[in-house]
Length: 70
Image (tube, rainbow, N blue to C red; front, side, top):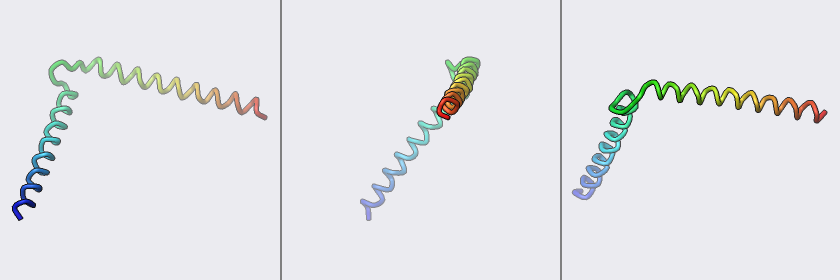
């Protein structure tokens, strides 16, 4: 029975450490030291523009293929 409690305790410790790492990583993105909110906002805006342009390009390609395929 002691072995069972040791194994359960080990898993509890590992889960606690994993949770702590996730909390610390999340805190860094929400305005911790060295984080520039403007840079994050700019990166998200650039990514959205890229995705919108890519979506439009793919739609144009599909239309061209549809018109010429008849």
